[in-house]
Image 1 (cartoon, one colour):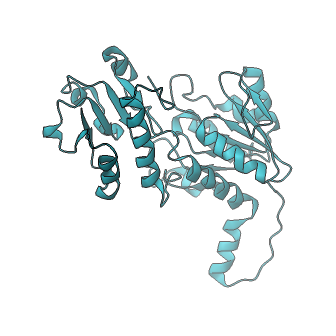
Image 2: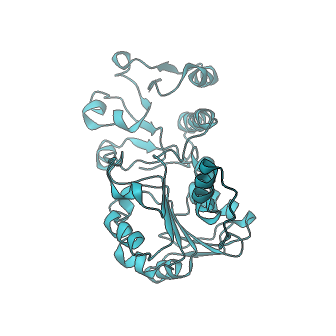
Length: 305
């Protein structure tokens, strides 16, 4: 069996995979890989014009959690299994959510301005996570890690997903339109951790923001196009919500002169919530687990199609 892996894997980590499966031929040179049965790669490589060259291809693992740029119908038409790196980025993204909430709650921007001027100035704090209600849209691995940490902050955690299930760390799970409306109306913090697809594109729109509390903080660490950005800007400009912590926007990179950069009630990070000193090790561990499942005909827990 031959597996092609792209150069996203540094030698230090690729060697762990190669050592773990001595019976598999691993190659990272494209010109030597066209008879490969499996591919481990970033989304940019996984386009039909490239995959058409792999006549023996049976399985692809995309090395990101998101797969919204991939042509899922293509994988289905060729009956190629597609898996993703769904658990690799969850911990660090969950931590990033707290950095954004605490930026607003602890008046961090004002304190930084005071520091720059050498001013010892008291700023009152009006919000806490404790005793608040946190609404998480999307209860996958990222949503679950966020919920787990929110319980340590003594918050009530409610979630929204398409099907009704019981999950740890969530006090309630909503799955209907009425439940989603209730989440918007009651949550002090609304966190987006949904995948982007045809059903979630611009799912959060003008109507959604009108339902939210004026004191609500909106956090998006998923994909920019899940949100109608014009509606978000309108909500921020008219103080329909308290603020927004955004790791993802539309488009990306966000143009230098975009209005979001200059808004006092917005905290932007450039799509790096997944950054971590441990991300490469987590990715290779997850990849090794997927390879083991594939060669042993076991069920994938990260299967997309």
